Image 1 (spheres, rainbow, N blue to C red):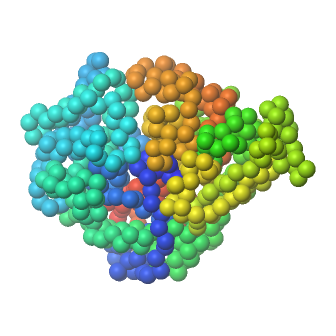
Image 2 (cartoon, one colour; image 1 turned 180 degrees about the vertical axis):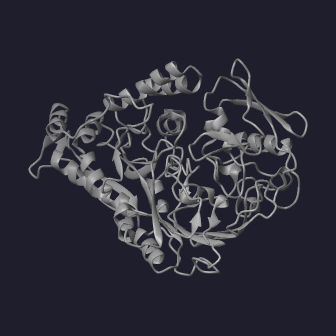
Image 3 (spheres, helix red, strand yellow; image 1 turned 135 degrees about the horizontal axis):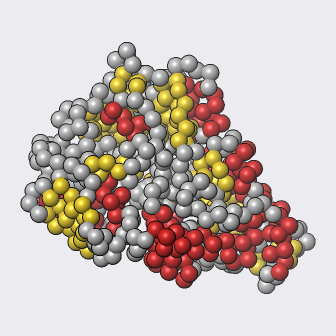
Length: 531
């Protein structure tokens, strides 16, 4: 799941939500992997978006290949100009952001890019008819106007510290997208943008194919053909990489280890905000009990998950904020303590039955936990979590399924989900925790409802004062100790294995939405073939 998706809560935040499809068995690249000239690349990823339209959330965190934002993130996650010629000029009260636009930029169909396209993009996203799951991230935006062809002025309702980071969103062409249904028109699958690549085809469940944009304002990419093969099964992805069918792939740490001795390949590890958690729906008779949620929070052995499932490629998670972030609240770590978990349940009236499973008021402490079919990391996390819970007297039934099977059950059934977004703490926490988004697709999947958290989240997003914001997010993290709506398990480092055929590869700090906009190919337009 994804909080971005959760995009995958995501993707979403993928961004909105991510759709998972079956892996195709056909060759994803017409030219095959590893062309002699190094001018094509085929990489294996696990997810695909529901749409390729930025109006519906695609590429909202940057690196969309097809589109550019006004700004972009560099390798150190610092903002840099893209379709804007400079970072925005911000008024003293923090309510007005003015962007000067790059001149001479054209969409891939040859039509000029202007301020009107920026205005159209943002106004369309905010339109109530637009099905963009992440539009609350632009809640601060009051209006956007063009001041001539090369200047755009955004006016905010309140100072929003993270607003500039939200302008990495890809810009859509008004002359195309305005003439069709924003939610279902052809632009959603056959988009036109100003980016370094042009979409050449999207076979859902199989591959997304791109060719270099020879007229790209940033210079024509040296990698002329780029293909993302959609392969949801980790083992299949590794097999196809080993056979030469792929030039690169994202892999679980245990599978990536199998390539350590291959001198023709390099391994890249990216630190992330990507977490795995278990949703604990408030509408379930068992998980709706705060005592059960608190007990599970300390019954789980997070360190064992990091060591045994991730093989050290990650760290324990106690909330959406990684423990090495400046926004993490020290003192909110929850060490594994099975005895404490049992005491919490005893005190709340959950007494062990004859088979060891606890019962309260005739309700047995059992519930289902769904995880995504083919995702070994989620499966392993789910099984370990169920095993830890069983020791405390809670019986969790793990079940695999597709999102089509899982989503209708999310109100009452637990899900092994994922999420996480680098940058400002508002990006992920608001979508994940605010009560007004309970049951809104992959946002707030647990239907978490905590007035203190709601108030803190509003404070955090409506002030530019960093100390006040830190205090607000400290409150959120402390409340999650007292009243967990989720059991956060691990923050996962992403591991990629890529043929050593190009120069210029690197990784950024990555979101949950791994492999599509992230990975060593986040800047594939800057790769150069090795001679």
